[in-house]
Image (cartoon, rainbow, N blue to C red; front, side):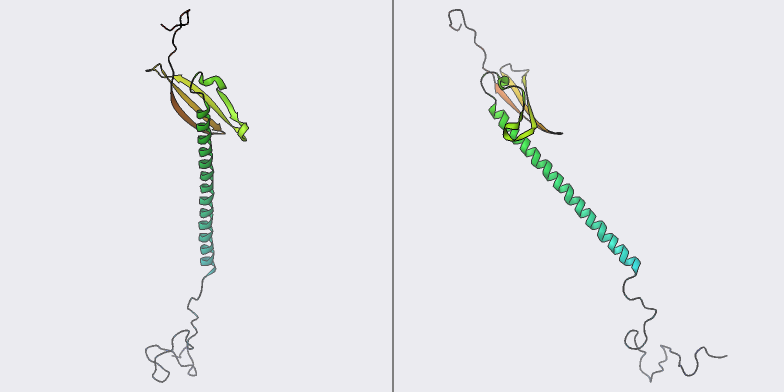
Length: 164
């Protein structure tokens, strides 16, 4: 039976060193070339890593965009709340609360796209209280403020001008 390796090329056997009794050389250390050894990344691994990084970046940008929209909505809600409080403070506390009208906008303050409306309801269990509700709207957003106002009872006067 003939050997696969000619006698000029001694066979390498890690158990029986043929290099003078020393241990066999390590792959990649100047001895064996490590041809069967994997070095570096494959193209598929690199593409998967790039895909994962891209998904993470897209998720981060999506989160930042949602955060920006939420911040803008909160800013608008605060503006509407301030304008509603201002309009509620302008309503006269004595007399007819609808004397200035029951609808309008804030174009005099530079907000022509923001409208307000006033509703006045008499409290069911107390006739001397009115519930004033100011609703301020911009697009689909709205904010409402409600306040109870004491209504002074009307006194009846006689023909002589004296109260009974």
